[in-house]
Amino acid sequence: MNKHSKHTWIVDAIEDGSASIEVDGRTVTPIPQWMLPEGVREGAVLSVTHDRNEGKETLLIENDPAGKRKA
View 1 (cartoon, one colour):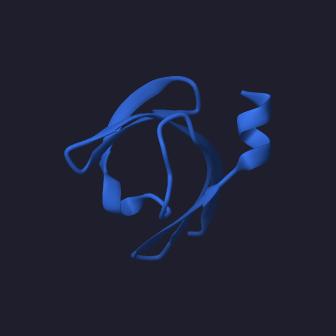
View 2: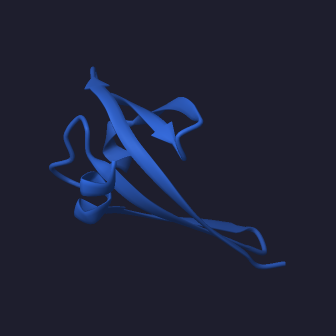
């Protein structure tokens, strides 16, 4: 079964190697800072693509400068 979804993450805070991420404007969840693209700062908008294939999950996390202007 293949599944594909797109999400918007907004970086609320980064401290002590952890980032608080607002996911699709609904929930806030912590993730390790190392998962973020290099140079991401608080307030950044990220475009996230999630692909789920048999036994494998893939996240593509990219800066979305256009998303920041919309937010």
